[in-house]
Amino acid sequence: MNVILLGPPGAGKGTQAEILCKNGFIHIATGDLLREALAQKTPLGLQAKAYIEKGALVPNELVEALVFAKIEQAKSSHLLLDGYPRNASQCESIDTFLELQKIAISHVISFEVPEDELVTRMMGRGRKDDTEAVIKNRFEVFKNETTPVIEHYASKNLVHEIDGIGSVEDISNRISEVLRLNTIPQVETP
Ligand code: AMP
Image (cartoon, rainbow, N blue to C red):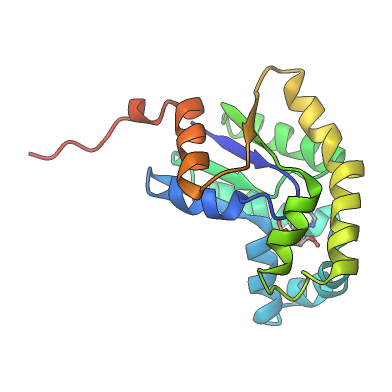
């Protein structure tokens, strides 16, 4: 089972991804990877800095290298892609890459949360790129660039819309239902 989480900033993807990891998923979150690179001041992190601070997308080729390396490392695990692909070009790249790796996306979870709720949540998060102007820009980027990604996977019948309003547990239950998580083979205890 290989899952892509899509949704506007602040929709709760990261929180739900953490919960899903308990079911054996390998979480690949481009935002986290980029922030980590930035904190460690790697060349990639330094190149990404200005984009992250503006709420703009980091150039595709920088993010791609990062994500593809992680996917190769995680081979044969359940993949959970969070924050990637984020535009049409990344979508095309990942589809080609996954096909070569013989990996199929099984589900795309699209979080549905109204914008005013998202702003409230993000202002309470205290992340450096959660200022009002940057948040606004990230919404714009999501609407303009990420909507085509959702449409692309919808045309393949992979998209499951999840109501992102409610408690963490409610939302987690909705996702579990979509993924039928009780059918993931568990390691048998002797
Ligand atoms: P996130 O934690 O997913 O909200 O991402 C934080 C920031 O990292 C974004 O505003 C972008 O600047 C950058 N970023 C994360 N994922 C991507 C991606 N797939 N492509 C380009 N930039 C990204």
